[in-house]
Length: 405
Image (cartoon, rainbow, N blue to C red; front, side, top):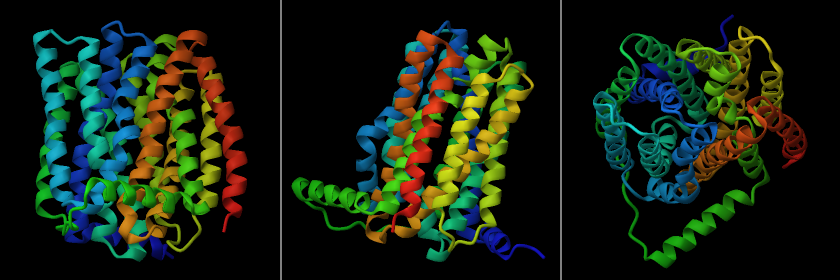
């Protein structure tokens, strides 16, 4: 007998707003992941050190630490369609410029990192609007299913993007991946302007009042143990486990002497795991408490990082990344669903901005810290330390979070 929760979730794909949004997001994320594969390989080919790889990750994620709360305020107070379309248009210029630099042979590591910083700034200001779209186009009881479907789309792109990038990098070169990335922005921008619901801006407030409301919103979210536990779980996972993806090219190239094709295969395996994790979440009852699933998946992610650090066989690495993708998606998507379905509507954008702060900000800090430790003790030992800390922290945090009222 088919799972009724699974069937109801899939029905969302056949609605005009959500279905069009889902498909346009898939195309955009395929381009993003194609670039995510090409970029670290480009940096390594330019002679960049592991620290510069970590710095590139920090540059793309660090603006979240400073600007995502402003992005959350924009999501709550401005027209989200225009916020997304405007910042995505600026972001589209970055792969276009890098493509031009590649074709003319003038690209340098500092230019790549600068473009990552610009992308990070636009992401920080627009992603809360993007993340709060699903609750605005589906019924409240469908929010967990909508988020799971959106996560499925994201992880499907994690398979297709690296696969396309691998083919292009081994045939036409790195420029092909950047061309796909640049082209993928346009459909999503058009959809943002066409299908997403209009948002009626609230009356303008003076700066002092706006800052006071911002602080109150953050305090309101943080005061609830269930929401606070979700944010801390995501943050710890991002800081300690997220770097396994950032430093995957170092593992492939320096430890296993692999090439770009093996790198794209391994990253694609991570995406396949994420897709499997998101698909499994579609069958979970929307009314079910997501805390145990998020907590235990986060602990499993830490264990997988430990195993990846100790692994001595190149063939086993994609399998470990497959399991890592399942664990990461199960944990983060469950935490996100809990946050968005529990937070009051009036501060949902701010709640999403805190989720992005925990995830992207944690990735940025983790990438920078792990980049420094890789330079000091090597990639294996750095990831082993991260995994041990993640496993211990999630077991301790999860016990308190699951008991919170």
